[in-house]
Image 1 (cartoon, rainbow, N blue to C red):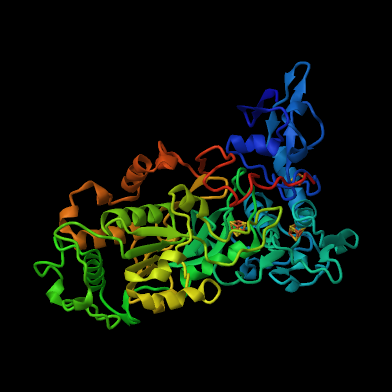
Image 2 (image 1 turned 60 degrees about the vertical axis):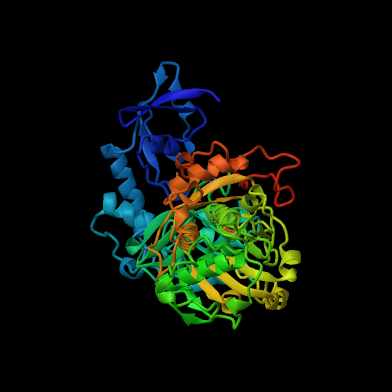
Length: 587
Ligand code: SF4
Ligand code: SF4
Ligand code: FES
């Protein structure tokens, strides 16, 4: 598309001829006030908040519906002003009109602190009210849908919510009814705002007219910190902001990524932050009894050595604290004396050891587990599949695969059903994350556990699997560490640490490294577990795993990077489809 160099507030910018002035000004860091325009919904031109002055043009122009090409004349390109005295006067007039019947609600409005109307008023709208008649009142605290509340008298009638339901979900629940100052948003009788993406209307409502039923009044937004993250609700991996305070996650909001989720996320995905706060495994447990982390690491290392028949490491020479675990397994009634078939000296035999992984884990955790199985568990079997029931897939964002990293598991060559090996039994079973033994997953696997002398679980939450394990070790969820997932497009996407780890929870690769070092202090200086940081681990991962060769994770940026061109025969064929994010129809 042809480009045009235009001038806004005395500064030049070169943009596509078809770009509107709101977006062109944004390129210069200039925010033109607006309500009805949204890049995901297109131009509507109804609010008149975006008025700008164009030299040589006598009337104000709306920036949302004025495009760079419109500024060209035969004599050149007309300069634009967004903060001139005339523009300020026009903006004050529009704001005065919008405030005629707006309630004085800011102190009790949950949008306060992230409200366009409040911001514009504080910047430019301050005046003494000239209204000498009572304000018109409208409906408040209306359950317009199961997850959204409407306060009709706060609405500025921008129509964004209506257009979202028409253009993005195609469900059309909302409309504007009545005339003049009695106009208001409503849902059609018998058709509540209940589509699977309804909370996006809360995000795009520029004022406090639509608020989320669950989040409202739980936290003042200026007390929240915002961290770039990834939704773990399905294989799409929508880009999000994880918003948190005082160690708790409060909400997810969509983060723009035109290749993955455009501007939106689904309502179900927004609920997936709950396990970050609730039912956390914070302290190691041995058969349900809390034990200190050093004791848990010692125990794990000893079991690893015994199961692999390793006698060149920590089980010799009383390296374990106070010899507290000598005599074997205090966990399951299995006697260490009953373990047999030890390999000699420093050799490890992993033939009776199994590691079960889950596509819920980050790429770093999967890689560390694979390395642990190879180096410390004597080449033990390592495999994983998703055990949760498939979710609902739609044509907008949601994928049936309910895991964030199925592709990452496949790209490490580990995606296979571990059940045949699980059913055989053995000496040590290590289950990493998720809850495969849970009621809604594979409870049938529980009976296979009887065939295993010892079971170690590494996980975020207390659940059926942690309860069934002899030893449960807490690891950090994606809110408490840096990491990556590979979504169904084979796009590697990064999430950032937002919250300080709870209790004794450790980054899973660090937990593997500590067990490895405890099991064999000689490994400390060696290459296999040399990584102490996210970047160091990635250097190793990119050098070791062909699918990730050359990946520079530090350069991923906020929107990630596609690993391979998706083609027939890809490691993740059948996991998802090749389509990118939804393309919202223009309003
Ligand atoms: S409810 Fe919000 S998004 Fe919908 S028209 Fe009113 S102000 Fe706009
Ligand atoms: S579509 Fe999937 S990744 Fe996106 S918000 Fe929903 S559950 Fe999360
Ligand atoms: S944003 Fe331009 S008229 Fe509403």
